[in-house]
Every structure is written in C-alpha cells, then in structure tokens.
Image 1 (cartoon, rainbow, N blue to C red):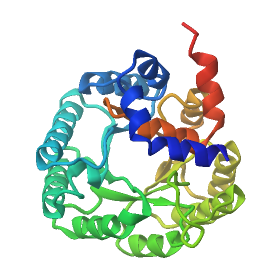
Image 2 (cartoon, one colour):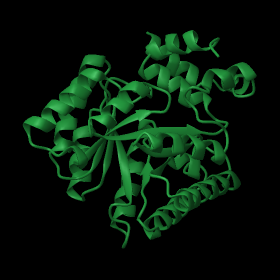
Image 3 (cartoon, rainbow, N blue to C red):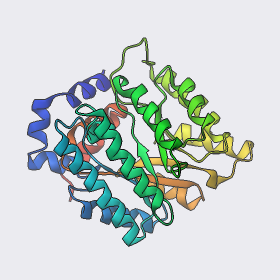
Length: 308
C-alpha cells in the first residue's frame, strides 16, 4: 500500500511544484540528492572516491517539453564529462532518454545521446554512459537505442542499459543484451506497472532479481547489481565464492545517502562498489520513487529531518 502511495505521489505535478520550491522540501531531499549544481555533484563524487567507491552521476530530470531543454540537459552532461576528466574522478554518467527529448523529437534525443557516448568513448581512459530505464511505455525504444549505440564503431563497452527485475520480460531482454556483451545495471524497478507485464509481489520481484543476478554474474561481462537488500547482497557474495567469480568482475551499486556503512563495508572487503549520485533541482519524482522502492526510507527521513 505504501509503495502504491509513493508512486502516486511521484506523479503529482502539484505536489512536485510545491516541494521543489520549498526550503522544507529541499532539506528533506538533501540526504539523497547531492545538491543542485555540477559543483555539488563533483564534491559528493570526490568524497565517495576517497573511501574507495566509484560513482555514477545523474542530473535529475525527465520528460522535457521542448528541444531547448533537451539540448541544455545534454550540454550539462558534456560539462560533467569534462569535469570527470579534468579532476580524474572515478565516475561515469547516467541519463534518461526523456531528459534528452525523446517525447519531443526522437531523432534529436538520439543525436544528443550519440554525442555524449562518442565523447565518453573518446576520453582517456574511456568513460561510460548508462541509459536509465523509465516506465514500460519507453522500455522497447530504450533497449533498441542502447543496442544501436553499442553497435556503432568505437562505442562497444561505453554504453549500457538498465533492467528491472519486476518486469516479466526482463530475462528475455537480458539474453539479447548479453548476446552483444552490453553491460547491465540490474535493479528492482520503481514505476507503477500492471500485473500483466510486471510482478506485483515483493517476493516475486526479489526471486526474479536473484535469478537474473546469477545469470549476469556468470556472463563474463562487467555488470552492476543495484540493491540495498542485505539478504540479496549476501546471496551474491556467496554465489561469487561458490562459482569462483572474482570480486572485480562485477560491482554492487547503491544510492547516495543510503546505507553508507554497508557501502564502505563492501569496499573494505574488496568488492566492487559504485554509488549513484543524483543532483539537480528536479528531485521530487526521484525521491518519491526511492521511497516507493523502500518505504522504510520515509521513517529514516523523518528521524533525520530535525538533526543537525
């Protein structure tokens, strides 16, 4: 019930308008969002790099309404790649196709993202662009575009996809991505989807996650396991040991501001660890979806709101 409530809240334009403009809203989000500027994201990335974890930086935003907004979003990501290179940060970038104008002009979105992947591929060392997954209305177009990008000369290994374990189609999509050796971030999923296309029970989503996780870990391709679920993390670690899978051939991924103790513990144990750092003014939908994924985070926020 709480999950459905938070998903509904994430879609409220009225509440989003109020939250993103209020000091209370910004304070609420500050634990999970690095700030509003590139400089804020860079500072947070440097702090994470210092304890030995890598980073994926995401400028929050989606469903832009005109080409100028899309171009501005892409330019900001170019700035991010420049900062990553100049400061020698252990970081890559994550983006949404609707933030690049997919709803406005599909060819423009493709051109903008193609330019970013080309920039990442030209860096020394090469960098990486993660194309995030959105709601089911965008699933096939997103995967088609990732396949297309990855096939372009020079791009192999520099662009990857996200697969959501609550989607019934996830295993078939993984098979196609693995056939082209495309890197995958596996997560559980945080959009409202009907039972015909998505598992509804947490137990089903978790079971599918573990099954898909094992496929990825044995694939010989470097993937990311995005989860804060300690039971699943323990299963992944045990599976790696039993199957003689080296610790540096995959990575765990967690969100900025959530379970820092666990993040640092995994680094100390020698496991790959990447922290997903979001920044920007459009944080409201992101925060609501994180609460939908793990309603216990709502209590965490409440406890920390009035602490110094």
